[in-house]
Image (cartoon, rainbow, N blue to C red; front, side, top):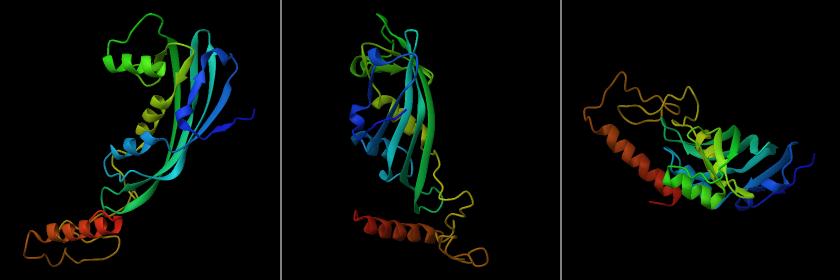
Length: 208
C-alpha cells in the first residue's frame, strides 16, 4: 500500500474515525522545531541534525483502542564522550504504542492531563501504553519520546576510542604523546591543553 510522505511533522497526526481494523500506513519526514532542543538536552550533543528524521508507522483500531507501531530513523552530530571529537551518529528506534480511550478519566499527573487536552493523547507510566481522547491524535509528543530514547547516554565516536591522554590532553587516536614514559612536571598541564583545545573548537564553530 502506498504511503504518502508528509513533509511537515507539525501535521504528524491521525484521525481516529478514519482508522479501520486493517493498518493504515503513514510516513512523516522533516526537521520539526522541537527536534533541536530535544537533542541539545542530551549530554555531548551540539544539537545538529545530520540527516532528516523519518517516522514510518502503521495505525489501526483494536476495538476502541488504537495501535500505532513503526520505526524512526535519522542522524545527528554528537560529541564523543572520550575524545571530544564531533561525529555523525545514525539513529534507529522501533516503537509500538496502544492507546485506550480516556473517556471521562483524567490522568493524576498534571503534565499528562495537559498533554491529553492539547494533543488528544498522553503516554502512560510505561512507554508502550497510553490514552487518547477525541477524534484527532497529535503525535509530536510521541515523536519526542522516541527520539529521546534513541539518543545514546554516553556518545562514542567508536567503541574502541582511546580518548584523551589524562596527563597532557592529547588525542590518543592521532598521536602518541609518550606520557606513560615521561610525565610533565606540572599537574595542571592537562587542564591547560584542554582549555586550548576547547578554545580551538569554539573558534571552529564560530562561538569563541
